[in-house]
Amino acid sequence: MTCKFNKIGIIGKPNDLSITVPVTCLIHLLESLNCIAMLDEGTARSLSINDIPCYSREQMGQSCDLLIIIGGDGTLLDAARSMSDYEIPMAGINLGRLGFLVDISPDKMERTVTEILNGEYIDESRMLLEANISVDNTNIFSAKALNDMVIHKINVARMIEFDIYINEKFVYTQRSDGLIISTPTGSTAYSLSGGGPILHPSLAAIALVPICPHTLTNRPIAIGADSEIEIRFNKGNFEGIQISCDGQVNRQITEDQTLRIRVCEKTLTLLHPTDYDYYHILRTKLNWATQNYE
Image (cartoon, rainbow, N blue to C red; front, side, top):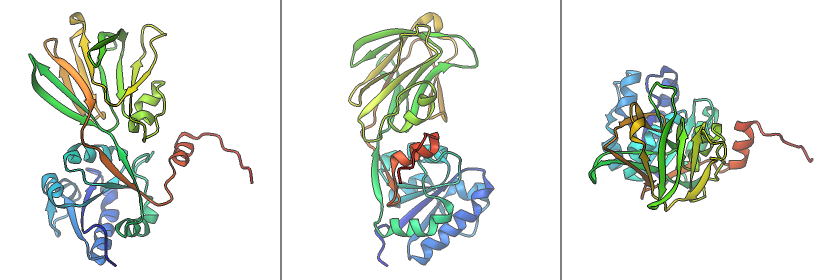
């Protein structure tokens, strides 16, 4: 069989020995298909795998033409951020709980991975967000997120006050526990728990979802993906404010800093099985009611 992809990177959930067997089986499958398996060095280290070559994320980004993620959605979120500059398509094998992003079941791994390598898949483009913190117009911190960016207090149950500007136009002043800025991908995560809308992945939109706003009329709003969001904080509320990217990367913000968030220029390509159905995933994961019309 002539494979569409030749060099396959493998990234697994860190410090989880339960992925040892799936990782090993995947490597053997790829080798049987005459593909080159490139195991992430962090994954190899956490599983104590020493008998096959392992590679840094940078080496994988420069060489791989496909990445296979083994774990849960959190594992794919981490991989998406670290590998986004290389624009390598990703497929995910679900060993976690929800599995909105990693949608290949372990019992169908061999068949589905073989189909993907043979060019039988559904591809889907997902946007990422980029946050930049600057002082006097000098950027001092940048981070990306596939799901969301959350502004909140650190370890203190107090409201914060801030002004929101979109494309340099004032929107409103908000007093709340924080703000969720979500992509369509993240609209089924923390944003959904906060009362935000579900955005189809094909929409070029960003959702701004207040966390427990003081004014009940301060509702979620969806804006265009070409928007730049600027957050200006009330200086009396600065102690202990941070931005959290996908719940995995955190950075404290001080009063002399400016926070701007926009959509990344580069996107993530997800590869799904040929029977992928977004609405079926919503019904299954969110336990929506169904009616049998047969």
